[in-house]
Structures are given as structure tokens and as C-alpha cells.
Image 1 (cartoon, one colour):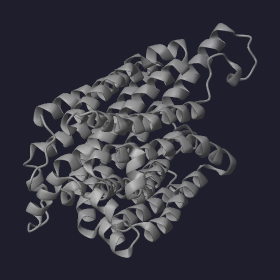
Image 2: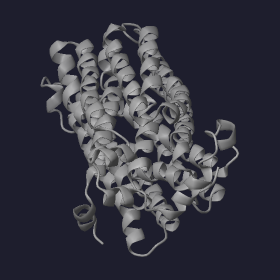
Image 3: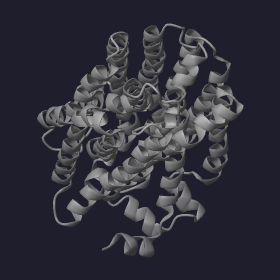
Length: 467
């Protein structure tokens, strides 16, 4: 039965819920992206000090404040959301990160920015545990990767909207207003969330969900058997979850791959600005009499537009990442093999980024092209790795396991932020910052295959466990 005919026969209310999660994830990444886009503006305003090389260290420390708080928040958020429920948990998280985002406007030094960045990290951590729990509650296994790919594409949409708006808001009204206005957007989402979200059982009782769609949502027999076996048990502890290889597979999968996305988010604008600066310096050195504008020099690109292009491509990657395993399953492949094969395919494409620095020397748009492929592959990988949690664990543990994996990803993010700060500060002092980026791109390219191998060794088959 086709996707369209299923929706026609049983209803499509679950996709409205997916739309709400998509919007929240868009806002999450809109707020998160502002710092990286305004890195140079904030540096010029003295937020990170006056020494050029030391600014890289100061900036990396601000990023690490976010990562540390995000790691802690991920560990706590999953437990809180499993305890208070999806509706309240998601709302509390979004209220918190909206006010934290606006708080950046009142930070004018590295330490104060670090404080507000930490506040943003601990509150934004609630998004993905709540989103994953929502999808697990509202979608059968066969549709979860596709639904996850759709909502996860909101991360890319937020990252597209940000470079097309934030630099211009900062230029017109000051960088403080860029933080305030993006933070306010989240508070509008709460109106729709409180009005439209309830669990499938509540929606069924109120007549807003058909019995046919309710039955379709709960059509996974193995999952229902596992849920019934767990019905009399208390909420499972972290220590219990950590005794399962499935938890560690998700842990290491996130530890190795999440930091790559963090690196692109927080350093990609700086990389493109550095490529522009290098081309300006080379052109002026070769053309001493040139008196024109830097923007007119051959090879100079509009970096906000380039970032929007990268994340536009990533949006399609996220949706394709959810569609491919669904297509495999529909063709007769079992769900485990479909997920594993799709993730292996998506682990290969980031290798293209190994050539980013070399291609950037030829033409910056070539570097943008391979980075776009790598980011799209990450989005596709992310759609599937999130779905492995609901493949392997009962619904009552999904948010907690997602939180553990998110904590692992944030820990990896701290490591890459620390390494990026040191590497780029060192090579910037040597006037060879492109070498630092080249090393970092080597890490970015190889991380996904490493993660896939470790996950496969730990869990050869994504099978539902009984807690």
C-alpha cells in the first residue's frame, strides 16, 4: 500500500504532530546558529578580547560552555521528559531556551557569553529527547525514520533562515537584536503546541483521531508485546540502561558524529570568511595597484548565501535519509538490514569533505559543494541513528536513551571545540589557518565510518529489548 493511500484511508493527524516537532527543531537551530554567524562581529566588538589568535581560544571556550551544559542537559532532559510527559517537557524546554537565547543580548564579555551559552545548552537539550519520544508515540516503526527525517530537516531549515536574516538584523539594529528577535520566535510556537498536542489515546477519546489511525500507530506487534511485558515495571534507571550494548551503540554513534555537525555550525562561517580573506590577500599581493572593493575580487563569495545553500542541500539529505530505509523495507528487506545498509551508505559520503581545503584553493564554491554533500549525509545519518533508539528500546525509555546519546554527542562536541580552538589559534599565528581547517576536515570525513563499525560490532541487529 502506498504512502498516499495509507493516509487517505486512515487519516494523517500524526503528520500534523510531526509538523509541530519540525517547527520546534527549526527554532532550536535558528537560536543555536546565531553565535557562529556573528563570530566575527562579536570579535570586532571586543567580546572575545583583542588578540586575534587568543580570540579563537576565547570563542572555543564559549562554545565549550554550550557543549558542557548541553551534555548535562541531555542527561537530565530525557529523564525529566519521561517523567513529566512529552507535552510539558517539550514546553518547559522551549520556554527555557527562548529566554536563554535573548539573554545573549546582555552579554558583552567572554565570561558573560559563556554563561548565557551554557543556559542555552542546558535548555536546548530537551528538544531531541522530546522530539524522539513524540515520534515514537505517534508513528509505527515503518514510518519513524521518514518522520524523523522530516522533523530533523527542521535543523537545516533553521540553519538556512539564520544566515539569510541574522547578519542583516545585526547590521541594521546591532547584534543584540539578532539574539532578542530569534529568541522571541520560540514563544510563539508554544501557543500552537498547547492548543494542538495531546497523546494518541487522548486524541482518540476526544474524536480528533480516528480509530483506524490509532490502530495503525500501534500496529507493531513485537513492540506491543515488549510494552505489555514492561507494563508492571518501574521506570528504568540510567544504570540499568548502561548495562545494554544497545545503549552503548547509540552512545558511540552520537559521540563520533554529533561533534562534526557542531563543528560545521560554529566554525563554517569562519572557514568561509578565512577563504575570502586569503583570496583578497593573494589578489592584492599580485595586483598592488588595485583600488577596488574586496567584494569585486575574483573568487570572493557571499558567505551567508553559501551557508544557506549548504543547509538547503542538507534538508533534502534529511528527508532522503528517512525515505531510503522505508523504500528498502517496502521492497522486502527486513527493518534491521534496511537501517544498517542505509547508515553505511550515508557514512561513505562525508569522505568527500577530505578535499574541502584543497578545492577551496581552486574555487570556494567547490569547497561549499563537498561540505554540502557531507552535511546532507550527516542529516541522513542523524534521521536513522535517532530511529535506532525506538527500534531497540520500549517507548518509556526512548527519551532517556536519547538523552544519554545526546550527552555523548555533546562530550564529543567539547573535544572538537577544544581541538579547533587550539589548532586554529596555532595556525592563525603562523598565518596558515587553512592548515588547521584541513586537519579538522580529516576528522570530519572519517568519523561516520568509525561510528558505523563500532555500532555494528556492538549491536549486529537492532532488535527490541525487554527491560
